[in-house]
Length: 380
Image (cartoon, rainbow, N blue to C red; front, side, top):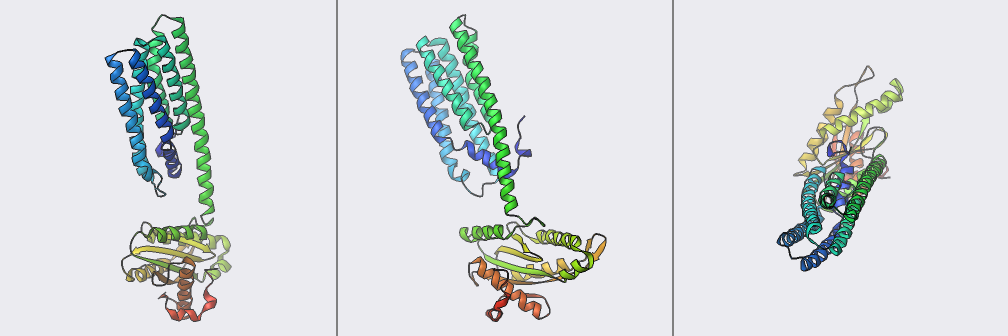
């Protein structure tokens, strides 16, 4: 009935997990309400088991609050991944289920030993708890629905086993609202999943090159700013610029559909060369950029650039044609050549244009590249 982690997009799943961790205020309210109602009933109804359940309930709800406070920084981290979110969700669920169990046991015991006036407080507390679950945890129904059942059904069972029309009516009312709450949870969950998934899909489309699926200029800038802003991982940041030699001839000879297929194949090869955390982007036409970060020395920049040239030089089989093209690579390093993406792109492109004028190859930016200001086309 519900999408599990296995068939939810990671970004959607992470947002759903974040939603249940934004319940600190409702949790504090239910804690105060439980303590107040429990204390009042305990004072009027001396019962050792009831006192124990109140104490255990307070321990459980305090654990819920502590968990929310301790995980707040991790939950709100921009780079929260699905694996970490799953761990956080399980911790949240464990605290939630334990309190629901204590709450249900307390309510049932109160229905057994407390006064009819106390029953009114218990019923009010159950309605408040149910509303809080439906409002705050409905986006994780595997937590919300069992919690509602565990917290409310024990009191319903006690009421049904007592030969009293009033208690029977209370039991029917609780069952009615329990069913309505479950339906509300299911509907809200399904609507939220559709909305969140659609939002992330649109955001991905806005940040991806439509032809190749690589990052576009906007996403490249976001990735660059994230790397520079965090200062992690430690090491050298390298911006590689490259374009394809003879790409126009491919379009003229075989047609634009074959040229587009070639660009997609080039993108796949570039992606296969990247380490985890590196970024590849297509800025338009046959112009590509690679951000290589965390390098220990500048030799790694030259090594990657030469690997790119070798990989692109291997023949491509496109639409039954064997296509051979080449590429040259120019690169600039940060912090040597600055920490501004436009500056680094321009300087890497200067190095690219300079080496292409010399017949092709790999070139690092040097100040001499500034004599070719017209080559700063990638920074526009």
